[in-house]
Structure formats: C-alpha cells, structure tokens
Image (cartoon, rainbow, N blue to C red):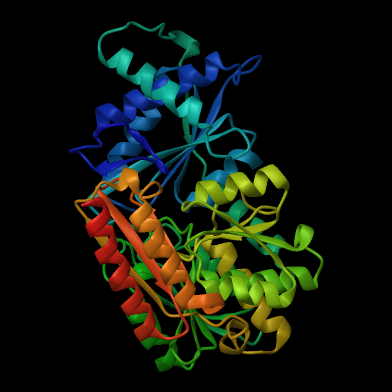
Length: 452
C-alpha cells in the first residue's frame, strides 16, 4: 500500500490491504505514540470507536478495540455513527482519541481507519508518521511493554452517543424546519439512523431512501455519488428539497424541488450568505479550494464576501480555517466545515443548515442557489506525462497565457499534477461550454506536447 496514511487516514480493500492484524497493530501503535506525546499523562486513557455499516467494519472494530485495550486504553464502542459524530463525541466525552472505521464514499469492499486526537481534531501529520513507524517496528518484532491485570483496557458499548449527537445537531440550528418536506438519501450508510431523526425532530416532514443498511449495500447506486434516485424521489413526492449523504456522512449534496442538483459550491454560497446575515461569518470570509467553480468566486465578490482558496483537499481547507479563525469552508464535493460546531465536514449538519435557510427565508432552494451561477467546467486528464514539469515548462506557460487571454475575466484555467497518478489534470471554465471544451482540448494537446 506504500505509505499507509493518506489524506484521510488508512484505506484499502478490507481483509486484503486493510487486515484485522493491521487494524490491531495500528491501534496499538497509536496508543503508544499518544502516550509518548503526553496525551495520557495523569489519567487512565479513553478512546471512542465508531464505524459505518460495512460488513468488514464489524471485524475491524473488534480488532481496533482489542489493540487499544491491550495497550491499556478503555474503549467506548458507539457503534454505527457518522464520522463527524465520532469526532464530536471524542471531544464531548473528553476522550484521548477517536477512531472511525469507514471508507466514506468508496464501494463496499473497501474500508478505512481514521484517528482523531483529543477534542475530535485530525491527528497531526507528524503523529501519523510516528504511528506508522511504530507499527512497522512492532510488526518486525520489536517488543513493547504490555499492561497486565487491572492495567488492561476495558470495553463497553456507549449507546448514548446517538442521542448526544442528535441533540448537538438540533442545538446549533438557527431555526426550525416546520412546513418543509424533505427527501433524505442516506446511502445505506452511517447516517441512516441519526439524519432522519434529526430532521424529523427539527420539524420537517421526512421521506427517506437509502436508509436500510445491510452491511453490503452502502453507496450502492445511491447517496451523494449517485443522485438519480434522489432527484426522482424529490419530484415524485413533491418535496421542497432533497439531501444526499455519502457512506460516512461527512458530505452533503442537495437537490432542489425541480430535481436539479445543488452542488457543494452552491451550498457554500447559500450558507455563507445566511451566516453573514446573522453575523456568524467571521471576517466575512469563506474558504474553498482552487477547484471551486469560478461562478462561486464571482458570487462571493458580488456579495462582498472574501474568498480564500487552498490546495485541493478538505484537510487544507480545515488548516486554513483553524489558522485564521474562519467559520465556513468546503469543497465542491459537498464536504462543508462549519468550524464553530464541527471539527470535520458534517453532512447532516450541512443539510440541516441548508434546510433552515430555506425555512427561514421563505424562498425555494432553487432561488437561493441562483445567487451563484455555475459556469461550464471541463476537466481532461492527460496521462503518461512528466507531471513534475508542469510549473517549469516555458511552452506550457505560453499555452496557458494564450488560453487565459482568450477567456478573459469570464473564464479560468487550472493545470494540476495528480497527487497519486502520472497524469496532469486540465480544468477550464468559461461562460460558454463549447468554448470551454475547445480551450481544454488545446491545452490537453499542449500538455502532451510539452511534457510527453
């Protein structure tokens, strides 16, 4: 698997790449590294462990719990809950670490392990590197001091986590959802229980689809990566809007009453305007990645809201928000972070806040989302090129400059080397789709010529 930790924990095919032995070993290593860092000093350590409904999550949960307990950590098993719920409970319960077992929007055979530090925040990169190093040393036979007797960790179910998380969601809503009819697509995932409960208690009339997880059907033709079922259901039921989550419910995409998709950029725009109206948008600033649609940037400029852009990845959005104290950030994929109320993207919270804006304003989601006009966007992947020369090739720089002159202020060009594959991504936005396609095609040819 190369380096174990990616941008979102450790992922792979469960029981092939990600085995029970690895889950146990990483958990032991995490306990040792946090102990060395002083996290456990002066008290008996405690961890929160949750998972999505994947079948493989059952044995991986057992392995993680065994590893932590064997290293002297008490474990609260919160069961099937969203990733942001595990992060929230890690902070709310004063736990020293949290562990979430999920592969998010990936297909069912995959799974993953994500560690949270005290407070429910993502582990620092250096701690992940240290955990990986300790895991490898243990795997190659280096002995470690094992607690015995009363020193071993204890396991207990913590069913109260469900109610605590729902109560938290409801406590931060600015207004109720009475009068709204909402379709929820839970992707047969981790939010199948908590999301309908929260929306119903908030006053909405709820229709659910994709809310019958059986361990095998997560993300299968439903959820935020497959919006067809939700679009049809919203129209069929005459709903005001629809909300779709992914497998671990850290994302949210939406559908308006006509069945049209409302993507992460549009959701960010709606929430930014709503938060500024109630003086909750600190520094009148929102954070997004360089892949956000140009229409989002233009909408924020028109509204007098500053946009700070980061590299692609929610981790970079979160870092920027934490460093400068910004309240709202996210990605086009629907990974939205409301930092005053969550330490990670929270799809259920995002959906609730979006619906609350519809209810409070008396305007349809379609009308609210029209504050941002999505410009046509064309993405071409150019494989088998020397991606390391993207920023140094004079020929490529000349081609980009020519494209930018042609597009003017109503278009945008972005060339980005892939982080995992030998390819370059060419992205072009323009007011006209045919112009975007033509410019993207020429730039793709230029990439092949200059870097091939």
